[in-house]
Image 1 (cartoon, rainbow, N blue to C red):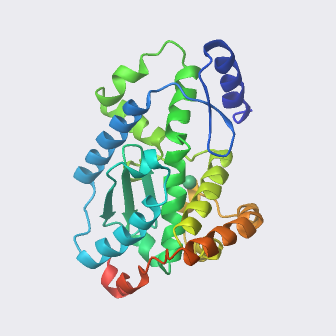
Image 2: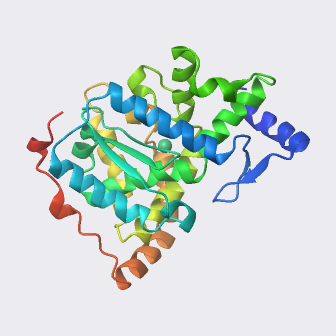
Length: 278
Ligand SMILES: [Zn+2]
């Protein structure tokens, strides 16, 4: 039932307000918030995170993550490519990463251990940027607003009580650091997978490594508590099967990218795991 409500709400509000948009994969979405407001929210949330979370100063880790992120950003549609993207490595041993509207990318040092090479890190960053391109944060906020019709959410989002701000962060898809876990829907996850796979391939990263990344994720969870990233991004057989279904097209894009000279040589920048720390 919980899964049906957002779909019903989307259908209803779409009909009444004509507030429907189409995602990059052709899915109908409820989008109520203006994009510049989403960007403001993303920027404000990122600023807050940088205050709360220690940032990794290690120049090697930063150069490595930036190399991968810039290659992905370089193949985004013009509107997104033109943004000035900020990339920050957070000192946190949980394997996690996120991207926010407003051009913000965050990667935990813990993710650098699970993502065994630049191609795998590209799979992670591509996936997270995919959530932004498909406006999943906006969609989630919109569904939330529609579900609580009449609530003056927008004005209260940036200011408001700490609880309200935490709720906003959770809706944007971050906030695990703040003790809130609110996963994107399955449908949003597979959409981000599809977009991410295409982005990494276009940038010249080997898309087959996306499958390996999810396997590494699962392995990292054996014998202990699953990594945070996994509890919001379940790496089940369906996910891997879906990626494999998309692989032929991704491999074509990958070969075209390589033929066009796109060969991001980020692995040479990868710091040794012992140097990554926590
Ligand atoms: Zn995701």
